[in-house]
Image (cartoon, rainbow, N blue to C red; front, side):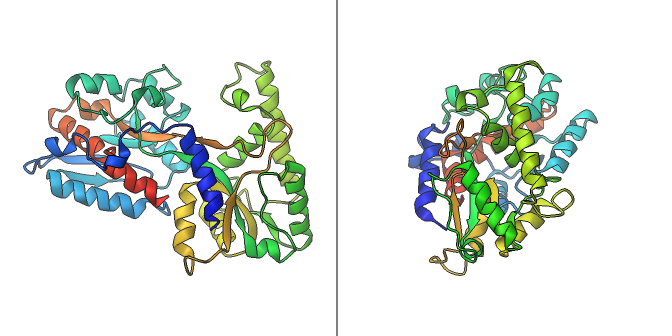
Length: 363
C-alpha cells in the first residue's frame, strides 16, 4: 500500500475537520461513570459492521467489552452496508420491528423514519442525559436533510478514492495515476488494459453503484455545486447530474467494467480486484484495512490508493469525504424505561474518544 498517498488522503479528510474533540486523550468520556454491572436488559442493535466490513471484528470485540462492563446483553444484528441492509431497516421501521440502537446513514436514506418521528434528536437526549455527546463538537455533526435536526452521532470519517493493482498496471506498461492524471488520461489507461484483455475497473453496478454515480456526477461539477441537490428537472444542477450519469453509461458501453457488472456482487468485484483480474477499484477508506490484512508482508506494494482522475470542473485532488453514518436511538427504545438507559450507555460507549480512536486507527 502506498503509505505516502494514504497519508495525503487522510490529511485531506482530517483537514476538513472531524466532529470529535479531545480524542488524543484517549478518555472514555462519561461512560465510566454510567456503566454498571447489575443491568440484565437485552438491547437490540443493528449496524453495518457485518459481512466483509474491515471493522466487523473490532465491533464484535467492543460489544463483548461493553457487555462485560455494563451487564447489558447486546443482540447484534449487523449486516453489510448495501441496498439489502437499507431496505431491511426501512421495512423494520414500517412494521414496528426497528432496533433499539441503529448505526445508519445520516443523509437522505434516513428521511423516512426521521419524518415519521421514529428516532430521537440528540438535543432531546441531552436534556435527560447532559453528558450525552459531550465529547462532540455538535456544530460539526451532520443534521438531517429532512428537517435540519441532528439525530445521529457519527464515529469516524471516510473518503472515497481509487485503489490500484500495481502488478496489473505494470503488466501492460502503466503506472499508478497521480494527482496530475486527468480523466481523459485515465480513460486511455482503461483502453490499454481492455486491449490487453484485462478488465480495467472492478465494479458491481447492479449491487453498489454509489461511488461511480458520485464521482461521475462530481466530474461535471465544482465542489460547491456538488454540495447541493437539484430543486427540479429544470435546475441547472439536474443537467450536470444527467451529464455525469451519461458519462458513466459511456464507460459501461466502452467495456471498462466487468461483463457481468450488473449481476454480480460487490464482494465478487472486490475479490476480482484483489486477485489481479482488474486494475482499478473505486471504494471507500474502509476497504484499506481489508487490503492491508491481505498483504503478504508490510513491504508488499501490490496495492496503491490514489485520487480519482478529474476533469475541467472537478480537480483530481477534489475528494469525496465526510461523515456519512452514525448511531441513532429509536423512539421505541427511548420510550421504554429499561431500554432508554441501556441505549444511551451503549451509544456513549461506542462514541467515546477511546473507542472512536480504535476504529480510526484500524482504517
